[in-house]
Image 1 (tube, rainbow, N blue to C red):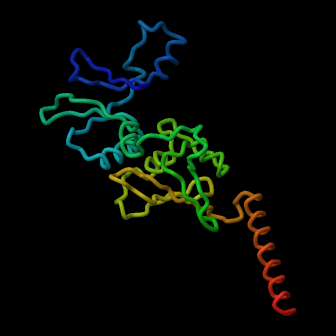
Image 2: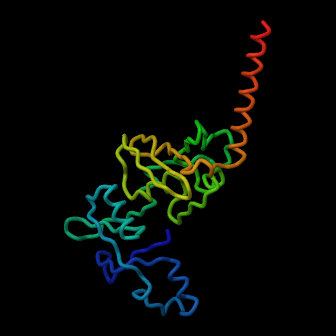
Amino acid sequence: MTRYPVCDSDKDNIIGVLHLKNLLKESKNTPIDQIDLRKIMNEPLFVPETILTDELMSYLKKSHNQLALLHDEYGGMVGIVTLEDILEEIVGDIEDEYDESYVLIERIGDNVYEADGATPLHRFNDYFGTQLESADVDTIAGYLLTELGEFPEENEQASIEENGLTIKTLEFDNRRLLKVGVSYINENDRPAKERFKEDEAAAEAEEAADEAEETEGRD
């Protein structure tokens, strides 16, 4: 955890949120015990404990916060929730990235791909030649949902356009995003080796068809 609530005399009196990187940066010039936390902390985001997860996710995105403080009906603090907490509930466990037998990304048609929601961003980037980055999520499902800023309905296909790709929700299970659809906005952006394989396969198919016709003609 890199963000911490700052309270003033009482745990119910939260006055800000301190990011560890801001503290470390300030400590280069000022001794830790002399740092004025009020000068380097951020405004806290307070939400009622009854808030729905999709609404909370929208609040976090719009306010550029990664952490929210939950309060009860009397104004007392009851807990902390982070964007990472929410996304972990949706995405679920990530497969071992060294398990080569588990197919994370599959090409299922002409410029049509399916990616497991748990695909780590670095593997997604390696496959598609993209540079998707996030300091808060590790998977393509987490990235997509963060960019959308809300939870789509299970039968709804919501999409974003990033790095020359259209990335969309495909399959949910109990609010978890299991499958992500991917396609290149411009088909010519697909890897050259992939297009070459298609052309080669098409040429082989055409050659086979010609040979079949010649054989039939001789018969």
